[in-house]
Image (tube, rainbow, N blue to C red; front, side, top):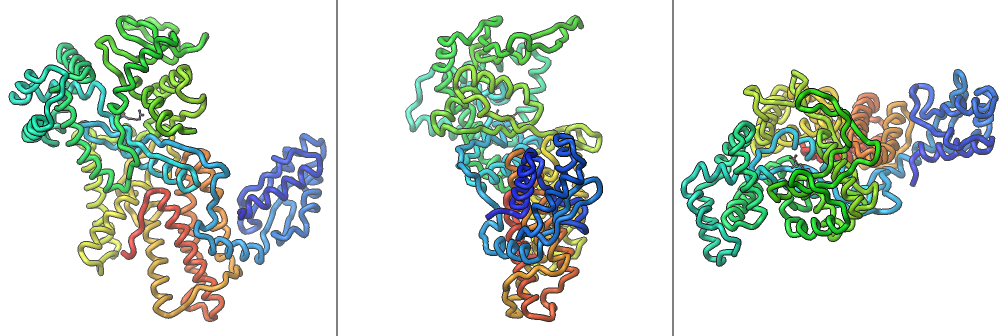
Length: 612
Ligand code: ARG
């Protein structure tokens, strides 16, 4: 099953090739002037340069070759030599029927399935999740769903941040905060494990002393203190190294931190419809690190750098300008070397990432790992990727950073709360839900719903508002957080799309109660034509989103589809079509639109309510 654009593209490409011209010039695109044509090809203009002939002459030969093509009603030359193609109503009706009969409403699959890991979300133990993690989660979830939908074998991994310096900070902060914890830590300094019964007791005692609100308070305080207090920072560094070295008390305390954070995080992710296949953490590769370091050393990749061990990554001539503390500018190798073992002997962010590449290769052997992480970490990933390739842990090109811009406040800087702190994801969800309730009420929606269903609908509206606002932008672009706009039922928003989907659902319920059956599609009216053309464009949108790892192409398609349906519904009555065959055809178009719209929304991670 092929969409019209592809089928016509092939025909036009063949017509170019028949004139001895490059077939690529035969590319067709959706027409800029839907009133004149469905598709257009602009290739005759560049072809004219290649062939040394006037563009209209080339276009004429293409038109000639295409005349009588079964899909076409007309093919014409316009302006300087543009080729305008109009699909015949019969061919369009056939294609619409084909889409209507397909579970996937015309969406194709990859020719060869690959094993893919999407590393996204990236929450950290005890550091409250903030809006930066929101984008990683929303975009990553969508990319994961899209890749899986197109047939790849995909695993989504949260890559929980549970092994770095922040753990040392929390250990030190907890000891300073609570005498019981400190005493316990002073007693359990060895590395031999406790008996299971003793461990249960210790874990229970820790739970009595350290809960989530306390962790939420301790982390920012400790992080702030470490910035100015060198001695404090060194203590935290030592604690990090000792934790990684297996000091029993620290391990148990750490285990407790991880447990407490995980519960809260899972709840928040779940509320957002984000589900990881793997909840692996940085700590999961701990056992791989020592052998990895030895192996890197044996391969001659490690160099000493003031007591630390690094991998040099810059190739000869790769430099960037750097500023020394005294202000002089000099050329330094770029990218920076990857820090593998710190001078305290601990594993760093890059170390765990490198070992994770190795671990993933051993356990899943992926063709591709996509890292859906803030663009500001681009240098980090450049380092990790180069080191992985050098060490032979991944095929060159098989690691890719899908970076994204920031969600900004009205001041154009990364979003902060009014008090200037980072907004916790939990509060953001609450805030958006409150807004969604307000919007529903204001729009006169949801009034007939039972309280529980109203709540559920408000939640879906809130999630749609947040996710669609994010995913409708190309991921690389930063955008301004504007809850009023995001949650409106009008405009290019998630709630608008939900509203359109719910409208179709209610129409279908009415049709059913009037015993109206969907039937054979026949495309006649311009609004039907426009809708059928959009249904046909789904696969191309998915392919573009897939290739560019950019869900905004799906968002764009969903929005256009909903708008087109709205025009169709206004112009083409269904229940009052006046004739059974027309009503049946339009009903099938409505059923198919809903199916495709819900598929597209699902790929964005957005669920539609039954009613509003
Ligand atoms: N935990 C990290 C952070 O909050 C993000 C992790 C991204 N993934 C990775 N493999 N490094 O910045």
